[in-house]
Image 1 (spheres, rainbow, N blue to C red):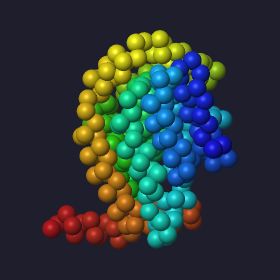
Image 2: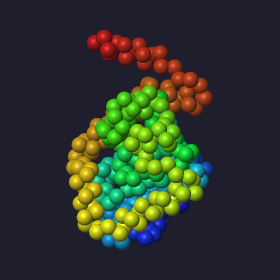
Image 3: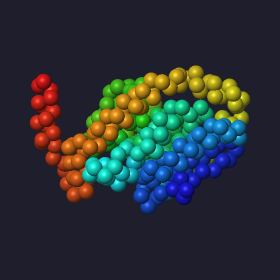
Image 4: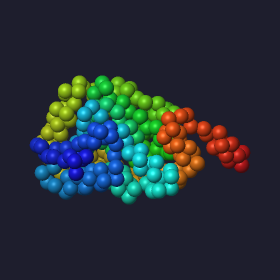
Length: 265
């Protein structure tokens, strides 16, 4: 499909998100295309590594807000394609490299926790505004981000909703290096070619040993999916999405009263 462009060069399968008119926001069809590409690449002896790139100065704005809005109105749910993608990420056998230019929002940031190498430009930014929409973290991020960045910084990003610059993400251990925009893709491909030159079986085994068994990540992902689905139809989420549509600040006063009652037993 045009919104997800797949190519293979020098043993590196490039998965390029190319929906610039919508800031590379991801639809169910796009999630499905990326999942299939990862599975095909893992099964293809000619592919040694996967590379995920954005386009036109944007990595991805995250999930297409129209999907969330449909759910908030009772017209849909968290798509099977979305769930399949985030459940596939922990199961990928070959290394994943990401090149981030511009915004990486929501799943655009959480998918990076499943990557082995992440390069970013100075203009890259990382944000996970799930709670601002009345939602919860996803893609195993509630487990993986504290492990990667430490609890304090993970809480700052996932709960407080603080956006990280490229340099802050590098300091936190989410990004390997910050490079100029003209060097981003060459840097990603150079790393991919270096990986492709390694003994392939040893490469896969070394990665598996370093990352460990995926069972705990998959369980946390499933727990997040269940909570995410429940939150999508919650009064908080409906108010957050309605406020988004009306370009106003959301009113969570009723939710605060319910939360206080719950906290008080």
